[in-house]
Image 1 (tube, rainbow, N blue to C red):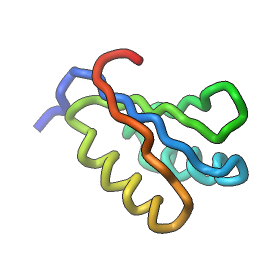
Image 2 (cartoon, rainbow, N blue to C red):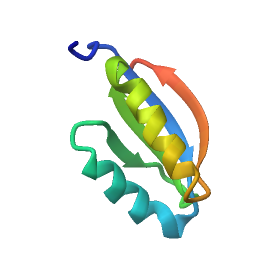
Image 3 (cartoon, one colour):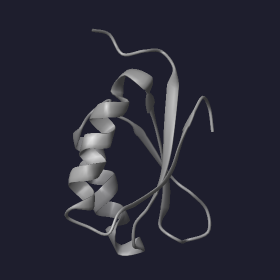
Length: 80
């Protein structure tokens, strides 16, 4: 099944020292999402993915939350 063309985003927060680990882990899942660090230096990251990959991204974020203090702040649809 091809991923849905709709875009989904999520804003997450991790301690600043864990940003690099989060980014490299997500990059290992090539094509899963695009990560953008949000301004303010608070460890907030916006992840953009397709609607068809949302459940996979949710699973990856759930696994990461078990290993680091990752907080999912909110989900949205369309361009943020």
